[in-house]
Image (cartoon, rainbow, N blue to C red; front, side):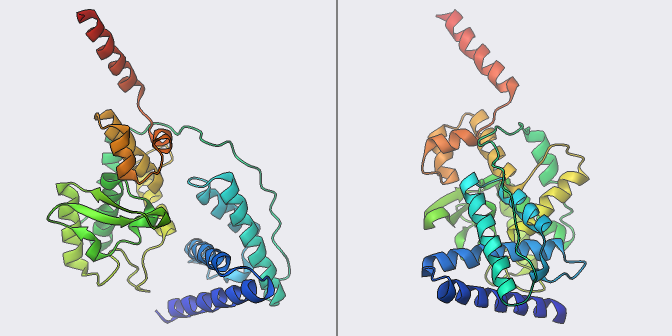
Length: 303
């Protein structure tokens, strides 16, 4: 516990010093400084998770750490966003060198990926197998299963899940009030099974503020902890395709579409400002396309 507290204190001090460096030496605006330190906080969470066993210090982060972080971000970010993240981490390395905490500056030759590549279709049976894999009879298993059910049954972003607080959940109406991108508020719905899991988890863990938190630091779980957890259970179930928390959001949309829910309704549940964005999320199976085509053809024969 003392070691973890020292790490947290050290990281907090570094973030505060970096903020002052951006504000007073680089003359960035308050908004830009805030965005930079927020992203650096995410990188620190990622770095500490990856290096939890070797106790490496953040100021010694290497190119491979930046590449790993960019790889994680690339699953949900555009090329322009990735360039910004890389520029930020290069700036961080310059700051650390200016403080004599490292000898070099990170150099990263970014090669843009092709945008909007359709992901492989993941059927409902595979997702059900994944979300049922944690053992809910132990505290960690119960927490993980509740998280997986919430991600799939609501379609919420993983960033929204880690920000969930108890007062956002309405068990009577089985809905959650979400504060999404751009501080836009929306309502997501959950089913009976998810409600039972969430009630059981809250009853046993008794969270005071954030629903999902690190028991050692009392801080909310990080996005990268959940990313690691999803990959772990996918590996346990021998699921050969890549599954991330974002995959569960895509599957939520795709499986609703196959069930006959309209794009406008799915758009509302996902919190998209444009239905065209929702359409890029939806991936339907070949069987669904064939069956839908047969239904239309058969209807035409009856005319």
